[in-house]
Image (tube, rainbow over all chains, first blue to last red; front, side):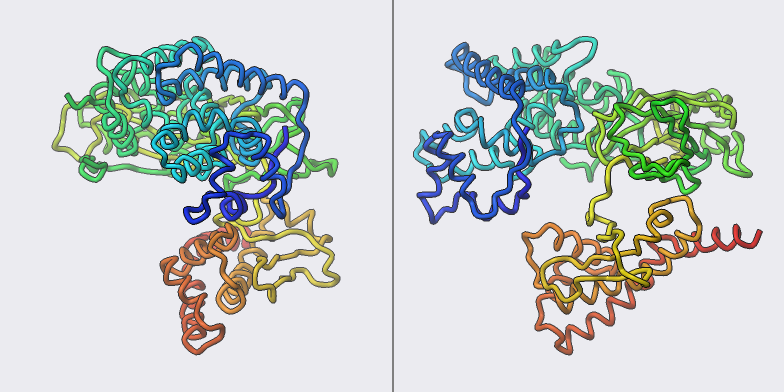
Length: 263
Length: 326
């Protein structure tokens, strides 16, 4: 896989859409992948390393094909409700390349992958709503932030791969993720957004990501659907119990003390 | 609601009662590398007996053997004060141990050990798949209360899984240490003639200066298990840090978008007990003006003391002296 050797500050200086420069918004709003690549590759000082192998190219094509199928299957469901489905798509395919958590920290590689292949998908997921409201600067900025990774762990493909690593199980496969995906597509929105944010940002450390799985399961797959606030407070509570080793605690401890519902 | 209003009852804890020690077994099954007493092993470029430096990334996994022992003068009876009068610590408490990587948030299976079986002879095996980790792994262990008790008025922890004792972790560095990030200054070997150490780039306003040590000393200075190396670094660190502080204040044209600048400001803010904003304003004053020079002198004094406290100089030196005096 190829990677950018430039750090985030480089992209911030040269590529981030500026309010006073509407022409700069086009790189993201026109949804022209080729044009974006040319723009980035002509930035002064851009530094790219590595090779795109044949099997890597095939996997990327497969991911794009599956995302297109997902969009065609659920044309009336907003993109944010399909995050769990996207997690399965990205994780299942990238695992075929033998990727593990070691790759998570290679932000230059994720950034290259994101910028070079996923403009259309990022625009659909993050930019389209603002664009439809004619908030063109906001839509360009939202796409930039996810394509380039203003916060590295939120880079478009990486965000889904991390969540996949946390919720995929060696014994049960994608069972939990499929259940979450199905719930997420239902009418009530629930706290899936905050679950994603916490799974990518919070330092939950437990064997086989037991904590991530248990909290996700209790909060979002049971009879009651946790709200965004419920999810946020559950993670706050978890972090507040730093004097207990909760990373193998029974589900009942999580139910009684951590994952509480507001109503 | 925020975490600030969640009440966590204080309770007694006794830390560092159980000591961890161990060794790394390379996949050839023959080479064993002991984790030094300081509990940190830098496996990257570690030289094994035949003079070959190890590149951990050449392997797909590592095995680890961990031993547990009671700290000198410690015994299970010490935990009597951390359980109820009617309880037996051997029945109520247990040690839980796991290998984890904070960078990737990978965590291996947890081992639960009864306190009664903690002897030097007991060995616990861990397997570390290297594709799951980055930079370093830690072997952490805690003594936890295993059952819940109803006694809310005591200072004794009553919740199940409450940590009553934390053990000092073992750390194994797998990948090359970054030049500067947090605690690390840019340092590496160089051809510097008869000098043992040199600092180059002190006149450059943008790039960080770099510490060089003689190539001839590389085989020793890359080892973590030599007392003379520890003593040399401890002694030289004052000078290195003071030179970097002078560079930062008097030479550096601070670029807030440069991560290396940000890291070094953070490091000196911590070591000089000053906020990042205050330090930044000192750096951005007119270079070498009286006010800036006075501020440097004050910070330098604080640095001298804080470095000793942060790196536990007194304890480290006492240990070195003790060993040398034997």
